[in-house]
Every structure is written in structure tokens, then in C-alpha cells.
Image (cartoon, rainbow, N blue to C red; front, side, top):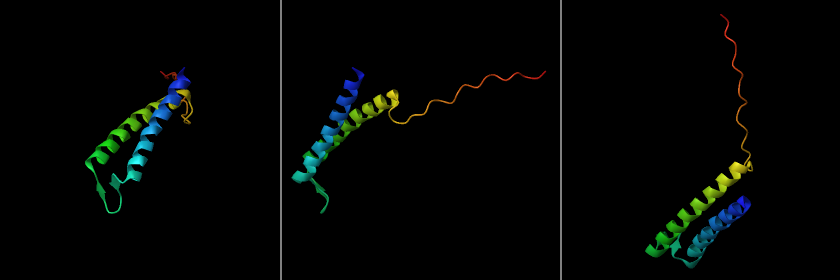
Length: 84
């Protein structure tokens, strides 16, 4: 079940990025000369925020599973005996 959450988070994180690419391809936001329509600007901001939320969730899922190269915490040190 948790693997389905990871897959859905990745898919739902990448779909808004495709929407931003579509906005750029349609010319609602142009890089040169710089310009943007209000619709293109706010839609791209909304889509980027959605994408960030889902991709952050996917990162957390991958980190919890140990897929991101997270190292184990340092081994616990045994308490040293104090010399009296």
C-alpha cells in the first residue's frame, strides 16, 4: 500500500510540471521578450506549488524507505565509567 502512495505522489508531482511546460509552449509565458499573461502566471504558480507538495511527499516516502541513500544514525556510544 505504501508503494502505491509513492507512485501516486510521483505521478501527481510530475503532471503539474507537464502543465507548466504546456503553458510555456502555448506562449502564455514568454522568456524572450519577457512577458506573461495573468492567467499564465498564476496558473503556473499554482501548478508549481502542487508539484512541490507531491514531490516533497514522495521524497519523504523514499527517505523513510531508505531509497535516498540516507545513512543510519551514528551507533550509540556506551557510557564510559568515570574514574573516581
